[in-house]
Image 1 (cartoon, protein in one colour):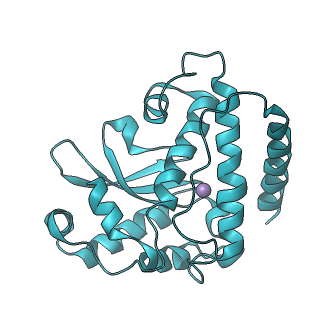
Image 2 (tube, protein in one colour):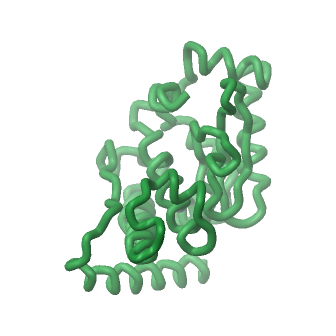
Length: 216
Ligand code: MN
């Protein structure tokens, strides 16, 4: 809990600093949520959405905009920056991309299972959708520290579960990210405290499979 509070304080400080830079041309913007901040409750509370999207993601966006000024990434698109950069630019660009994918893959009307060729590919890779869910939860729960579990596709459409630490994204391995579960504590600590596995189980109820199918 102490770590959470400390990181919130740091992020708030960052955000305050960034607002002094309004005269600069801010390239990347905070994505708009396709639902209201209370729409995903009780799976993800309004408070968590407000902190996670409004503070954490905003912080990454602000940091990225400042860090790329005067660098070779100044006019690059987000995916190019994630593929080519390292260090703090990569960390912030990766987290902007990761969270853009994360927040747009949920819907208050989500849940159920995918259909069409995505479902077929999942069944080919893991035998059944239920078994995929089990494997995905195990990968997410088993990640040590902060990171992401991804459902990703290779160039032939073959599906894989990819575990990434910190700001990692399967894009850097030449894979296409389809669905990402954020296992940083900021994603669940307010609602679930240390119960990461419980949080992950609940997330299935809000996954918008239509969005994930479109990414595939
Ligand atoms: Mn996050």
